[in-house]
Image (cartoon, rainbow, N blue to C red; front, side, top):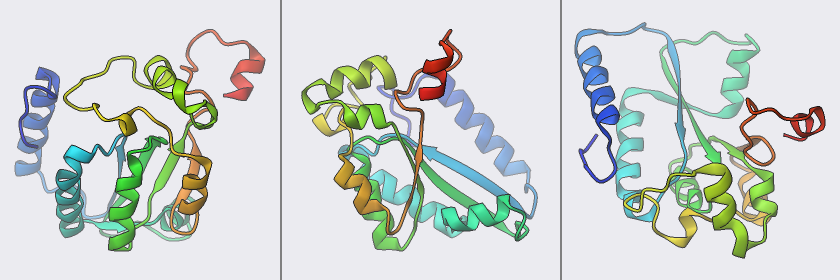
Length: 186
């Protein structure tokens, strides 16, 4: 992690220090599956994202969603160090991540928010701030694509190489007091 005081809080720094310390002293289990979740793939951090994927490829076998389903269904045991990539929310800037993954022959889960995609583009930034990320750090999210949803055509084009899942319909906090009908829709 490269320290950037505009985007990293004290909690981020402490978490990184603890993680690095543990990694230095612990080997970890020989057979493990790690799920790594991304949200945005901002243009200004795309080179960093590429470096992260290259780093991860050296240390893990990055598996596909199909391989993950086999592990879950107990069709095959986890052997070695496996890593599954996931992306939440269906943010337009994730198309950059898709391009990188496609170039490398990697696939991932993309958990979209259909209500976000269904929102008219002029209202998507408002939806994003209200439902997905109420606290915006301008040092991270600053481009229009950082607040916009993928289109349904974008989602369809991903289906050949990636797996789509639903990250609730509106990104509503399901722990809130929702009526049964609202909970079922989410």
